[in-house]
Amino acid sequence: MYIGQFIFKTPFTEKGKAHGELGNQYMRCTILTSEHHFPYVKTRIRVIEREEFVLKPVEVAINDMEEKIGNIHSALKQQPVDMKYLQMQLSGSIATAVNQGPYAIAKIFLSDVPTTEQTHSHQKLRVCFKEFIKVCHDALIKNKQLISEEQKEYQLEMERQYHEFVKKLDSMLRTRKRHTNPRKHK
Image 1 (cartoon, helix red, strand yellow):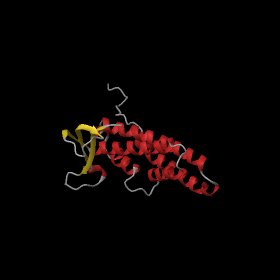
Image 2 (cartoon, rainbow, N blue to C red):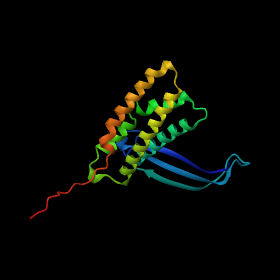
Image 3 (cartoon, rainbow, N blue to C red):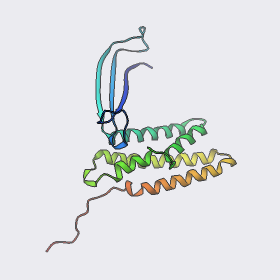
């Protein structure tokens, strides 16, 4: 495999801090293109192109959710499945104690934003959450198949937290349509 492009991401807020509240967290993405592909004879290769773009807070949230979905997918695809890794991904995704987790993202970007201010990105985030719920469900099923008798209580707790999580997200994931008055004016 040859590598000729590198990307690094730098989080920032409008106030200059690296990290802040989810609703104020931006991400600067920098893509560097090298003159030659790695590996190369020389250890230092000149950068011939530099491209930067900034992700808005809702786009950072989409990026985070896509990463969480990808992590759970990769945990499910491992052969054999690494049960500890699967459980770590699952509990980090749906546990109610997760502070800046998926529920906080949904609350900030899908619940607290007026319908008139929602963009295509908000709809994309809504789709990410629907996929996230499905992959968490698949992970719970796989985990149930793998656990021993001693972990049945843990499984039941994870299922309870999953159902609570889905219930809290339900109203935020429905597409809201602008209602018009169906009565005809005389």
